[in-house]
Length: 240
Image (cartoon, rainbow, N blue to C red; front, side):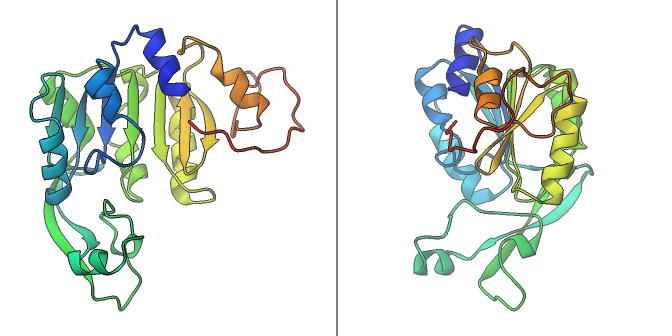
């Protein structure tokens, strides 16, 4: 619903900035938008294997650019951790696209089936400045627990996004930092599964902020952001 509303609002001319794109087939359903919906974007992924899969998906696209690097609030070369192929082969239920700059996000202490690779890491504002990008209708951040640092590396409000998705589990430091960043950018925050959705007022073709508020999905809203709807609604599952 949110992606459809954004698509209709911009007549299909949606530019996506995605940090932590993985192999391009998991997470939010963006691949059909790039292939069939006319969307364009810059997709950034640090893990070499995941990037290779992502690049293969978009190798013939003239509307999607891909970059193999990490994003943080510093410029450096850092270790990126992921489960070794043999660990993934032995447990198909594990998420194959997982990678993180924090080892403990991948496996607990004493686990030996974790591999690391050194990756270049840049501030996002430097990347955007180098490429001459100053706006994006959709921003997606899924950085394996490094979302706070990604948000500190650029001016979210300056991009004027209509919709922002940040992967942030409930009750975490990442959630707190992400809520603050969304508020600073003037976005209304909503909780949808493991994602925080930041919605600019009036940014969609239909007023979905009112629908989400009705289903009690709104969190951390200021008094002037809240709609005049009942506040005692029971939490229900609403998919994006």
